[in-house]
Length: 197
Image 1 (spheres, rainbow, N blue to C red):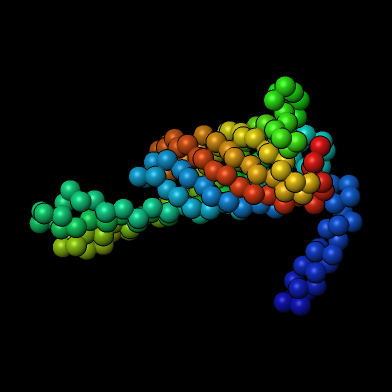
Image 2 (cartoon, rainbow, N blue to C red):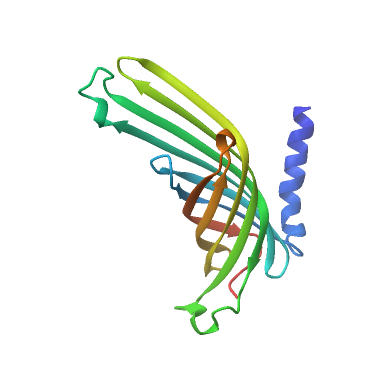
């Protein structure tokens, strides 16, 4: 079974340049921040496929973390309290580019920037550890449906490299309740086809 997986991966890797002549693929990663749960920071990795001009489909994964100490309880019987949270988001959806939206401002020192809108749907998992010095450790975790609406700008700095800041509204549904978060990030992407124009 392993050999079949390895051969398939090799075949896929060597076929990318040929397949990419008709379809634009992108791989990226960078920094991501989400509000709520005392603010979570981490990373994002993504894969995109643009089958036609100005339209794409994406898959993205966020791994976000927070490690906080609640100093309010340090001098009480409860003792020092710390909270460790890990939020994971796996989202899929469409992305629409608007290359002519701001023609007057669409070029910056010879580099093209293109605004976009995106919507994502998928799943999130939040795992939280609450540690109290004198009373012990409490853990909680939940996995739930998530959706996201937002956008950003592609700064096409070099033919195959793009810098992408984004801001999104992220809606999670943990413990059968809705939570609203803002998600900020900046990523660097590599595209199979040149995007200098």
